[in-house]
Length: 117
Length: 116
Image 1 (cartoon, rainbow over the protein chains, first blue to last red):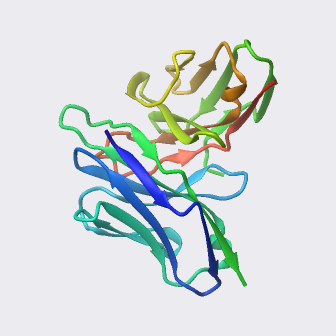
Image 2: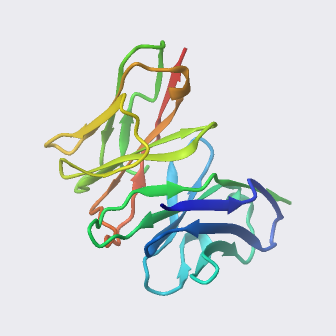
């Protein structure tokens, strides 16, 4: 069974500082991994996804994430935080199975990012 | 604006009742996903439809059901409502929908359900 753990329900970062959001997954088969962002009173927006190609994935808004199989991690980073990055971030996993190319999603609990001036 | 529409925006009802939430996907998108977001359980994937057929099932209760119609809009039916069903229900649409799909899911604004 798949699962996702996001370390830290709240992260506070200074404007201009590195943003690091941690995500660890558990999956019995090769996973597809996603990071989503949710701004207040809005739906989710895909930041980036790993689909078994390059392990370093670049997304929108300057975010990137690295898939590390040995560590079962998919941490999200951004070199320099901007005030507009204040939002909730969700990591998600979707399993690829030979008999089922559809795969259900499993989301982490989310990490709320606060950016301070 | 993602191009995905959901109605109604807000819904207040009583325990034991039944409600229907509606989602219209972006033009050309064949997949519709349903999600539930609550403080207690976080974000949960409920179900995915592709071109009218159920394709993936998540943590959807037996009291809940969904369908996707020939015009590709989808409805999520929630019955025998309980207080714990109060949540934000999102739908998302995607051109494809398999794991091999490289296209993106686009989320609607959500329907906030309050069960009193």
